[in-house]
Length: 77
Figure 1 (tube, rainbow, N blue to C red):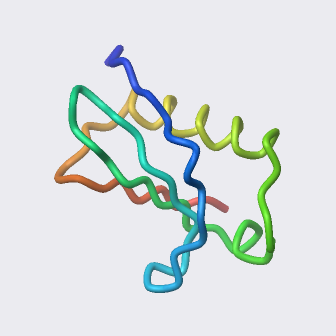
Figure 2: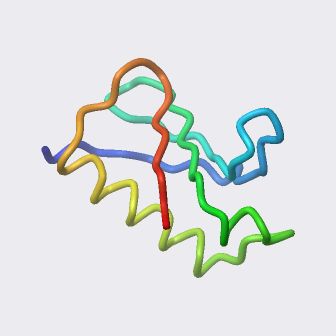
């Protein structure tokens, strides 16, 4: 799947989901993307390099998966 995705610069830790997340615009739909990871969870702040890595992970995820609803949950090791 080759969809255009625009990532917003709103990366925050969501206490309710216990995961880092940001929003993105995917095919005119606002999506919230959650990253479930013990390593990321231990970070107080995520730098730009890691943020770009997370964006790439989303792009790879979208190549193999179809989002359902308005959120994506990515389990990381």
